[in-house]
Amino acid sequence: MNSVQLFLAFIVLLAGTAPAFASLKICNQTSYIIYAATASATKSELDARGWTRLVPGDCATPISDPLTAPAYFIYARTSQAHSGPSRAWGGNVPVCARDNNFSQRMKLPLRACPGGGFYRMPFALIDRHGRPDWTTTFTEGPHLKTLKDAKRAGIDRLLTDLGYRVNVPGDRARDLALEDFHKRARLPADANTAELFAALETQAMKASAPAGYTVCNDSGQTFWAAIGLKAPKGMLTRGWWEVSPGACGRLATEPLNTDRVFLAVQPKGRKSLVSGPFKLCVGDNAFELTTAAACAGKGVHQAAFAATDTKGRSGYVAHVGESGLLASGSLARTHK
Image 1 (cartoon, helix red, strand yellow):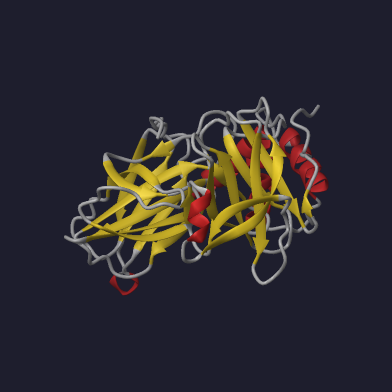
Image 2: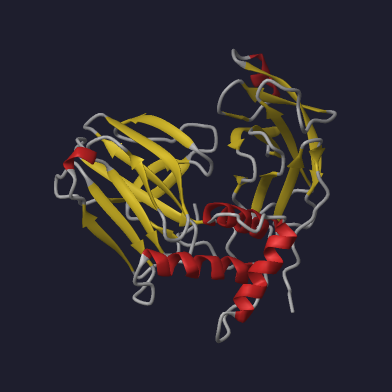
């Protein structure tokens, strides 16, 4: 994993005050959409889970039970929809996690990460002073004093990521940008803040191609995706990543150095959305396979993959709609 750039000035830890609702609560007082993962540890086992999505100005409860484990850890990063380098908050505790949603129990001491796209990420210890409830608030700096400030700043940042000019005196430019975005994204005039953030994030993700391989779900159903890449000896296949409607998932995070990436997409209980003439090995559950011989193993079989052209690209975004792969398209990044 590449070194993580620490951006936020500090993380404020606030103790909860209602034992009846003992839990771990996290709040986002920044202008970025944040994805957070947590882990709890006993003497013999580590339980890691992610990702909890936090839009600016909102709070969530990734752990709803009283905090009774000896130790808890947290790691957070910005959405890939934001322009510029990704930003993350963590510490020096290695925990196995992956880029898409996961829930994984691991034996301690941690010697190696499981397959299926897991790798070590630097989590931070939560110093909750032994209390059963705790609130962690991510902050960006003194200019965002409240969650309400963060919410407004978050909308402005995503509009800027999409090429709108909103950082001018007065609210006229911002109002025009929001009006234009509603039309382009086909959002109803009465869309709530959650719907607005979801649309802004999805469109900003479509407008950029971060390093690696990203799949965006433009259909109305959850699906599972797998990819195939050329390896030094044969092919490497990885899956399955769950991608919800309107969301995007990064199936590979390193810059691409191959002419083709193979993709298979399957909705639950329905025929494949993306398939093709290339037969590659896949597992019934989370998997990472490196040789054709692995297809003979239990719970492993061949699936049909389509090839996507990634020649000369360090990043690629595949859009999948109701009828399969879609042509590339996004909101314009420059507005006047």
